[in-house]
Each structure stands twice: as structure tokens, then as C-alpha cells.
Image 1 (cartoon, rainbow, N blue to C red):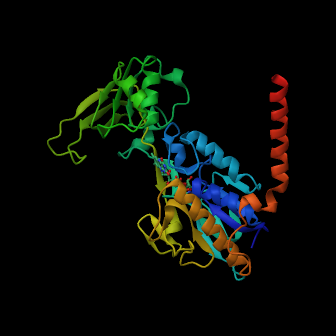
Image 2: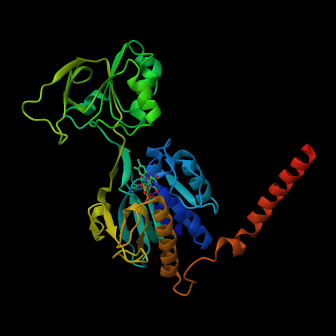
Image 3: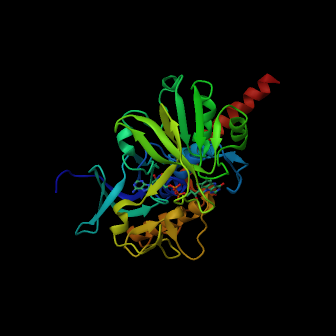
Length: 361
Ligand SMILES: Cc1cc2nc3c(=O)[nH]c(=O)nc-3n(C[C@H](O)[C@H](O)[C@H](O)COP(=O)(O)OP(=O)(O)OC[C@H]3O[C@@H](n4cnc5c(N)ncnc54)[C@H](O)[C@@H]3O)c2cc1C
């Protein structure tokens, strides 16, 4: 069987709001916990809208998504779970004793007694330009990220996208490049309003609803693209006229897309993107639970608040799967002795800052 792996009580797949809260709550339930995230950073889809202000998380004053992400990550680490980044989980096998062996796309293996799938709409990956041969130009002047702003100096740049990244880069590059054109499939932008206004008032040529239709180059380096307006259905017709644009660099900012990958072949019952679960977040596979946007049940709330509730329910179900006699939920934190030491540490900090305040007066 190869190497001997550490066995975890629960392995949470996905490091968005649901996975992060599950990692915290499973610590409250004394479970040996591992969290695996496909990306190199935690946060899930909250990473897609860092500047947006979130109002609808209970008990929180309006908070930028970036700050909320930071707080969720901090909370997830309360009980020191093992956190693995950069692995997309693809395979599941059940050993004779019921242990689950899960494998990643890059071949790593993990053992666990239970699984919580908190995978949203799948592993988040950069949405690529879906045109023939596009990937060949990535070697040279078709970009998905800007790593060196200075390399755009004096160039004719075409940006495609309407979110924060596209708008921010248009604003940043307009003072550096010789010309910046931005095309977006919709008339409405999802980037911050203030930055959209700034872009529209600048020298950026903004074309909506437009998209890139064809690429022209020698197979390695692009020297022109054709762009064309979309009709009300977001499509092109045979009559659509294309406009050819000479370019030195093309920057694609189409956001992130979910990829469920081979998890769809695990035998889980699902509807489109979502896996069916009962009110305890149990799926049709024993020991496999779901939480967050990936879950499908009658009263499911597709919100961060809903992800938190799902996570606690899924963890409780995982605990009872391993220990049927355990209590059905963790004791509330305000009465839970697991926090005694952490509370004392916080009280010392509070006391110190009270004394400092008094000294200042
Ligand atoms: C633009 C925008 C604005 C929003 N605003 C709000 C708001 O104001 N309030 C609100 O409550 N909600 C808001 N939402 C919704 C909210 O972001 C989601 O409900 C929430 O992120 C769901 O959390 P999740 O953990 O279930 O999934 P996700 O956040 O999607 O996280 C899933 C994670 O799992 C990882 N993953 C997937 N598959 C695998 C795999 N096979 N292996 C390893 N890792 C994997 C993914 O990479 C991802 O990091 C907004 C969403 C968007 C897109």
C-alpha cells in the first residue's frame, strides 16, 4: 500500500467560508482535523470580491470581504488544524476498514475517517480565453496576471473583463502604456463603482458589450485581435462586424471559474453543481458530508451565514458518525472549558490595555 499516512477524524475539502468554519468547529469537537484547498490561498469565493462591503453576516458591522476573509482564516486556525494548500482533491477510495483514502490531482494521498465537502462550485481556477490556440500565446504576450507593470510601458494593451482586476489594471496601465482598450461582455461592470468612474473618465477606450472574437499572430506572439459587439442575447450573428485591433499585449481578467473535476464520478447524488444532502448534511455516501454552496437541500441558504450553519451541522454529523454516543453538538463557546486557557490569555491582554489607558490619563 506504499507510505503510511496519518489518519484524520475529518478532512475538509475546500477553504472557503464553509470549510474555514468547519475547521474551527471541528476543533471545538476535539476532532483531528485536516483542511485541503486547491488554491494557494484560503478564502474561497470571498477572494473574488475583496473590496466589496459585506453587510449580511450576523453580528458583524459592514466589513470588506478581504477583512472578513482574514478573520475567517484566523478563526479557522484556533485549534491548529493541518492545512494543505495547492491540492485539488480528485479521487476517493474506501479501504476495507472504512477509512477513506483521498487523492489529489498531483498524486498526494490523505487518510480520513470522514469527509466534509465544502467545495462551493468546485476548485477555483482562472477563467481562460476560450479561443482556438489561445494557450500558445500565453508564452509571450497573452497574460492572465500582471507580474511586471513596467513591461507594459509604451505598449498597446487590450484588457478583457469587467470586474475589479480588469478595471484596476486599466486604471494602472493607462499612465504607462501607449494605449489601453478595455472590452467587456456586459454594459454593467462588477468592479468598484469609484474605479469604474475613474476608468471611464480617463484615456482608456472602453467598449461594451464587446468581446474578443479572433486572435492573429505567428502562433507564439499575438500582433492583433478582432473585437466585436454582442447582441442583446450576448451573442454574435453572421452579420456582426469585427474590428481589427493591433496589440502588443492582451490581458484577460475573466475572474475565477469552478471545476468540480472527477468528484462528480464519486457516486454522489447531485443536481447540477450541488450535492444532495439531508437536514444533517449527510450525502448518500456514508461518512461523506457537505457544507456551504455545494450543498443542496430544501431550505438551503446560499450565503456566507448559511455556509457557517452548514459547517457546524456537517461537523456534528461527522462526529456522530465516528462516535455515535457523542453529544449531538458542541457545548456553546461561552460555557466551553476548551476556551478557558484562551480566555485567560485574552483577559490578560484586556487588563494590560486597561492599565495602559489609565496610565495615559
Ligand atoms: C461577487 C460575489 C459577491 C458575494 N457577496 C456576498 C455577500 O455579500 N454576502 C454573502 O453572504 N454571500 C456573498 N456571496 C456568496 C458567498 O461568497 C458564498 O456563499 C460563499 O463563498 C460560499 O462559501 P463556500 O465555502 O461554500 O464555497 P466557496 O467560497 O466557493 O469555497 C470553496 C473552496 O473550495 C475549493 N475547492 C473546490 N473544489 C476543491 C477540490 N476538489 N479540492 C480542494 N479544494 C477545492 C475552492 O478552490 C474554494 O476555495 C457573494 C459571491 C460572489 C461571487
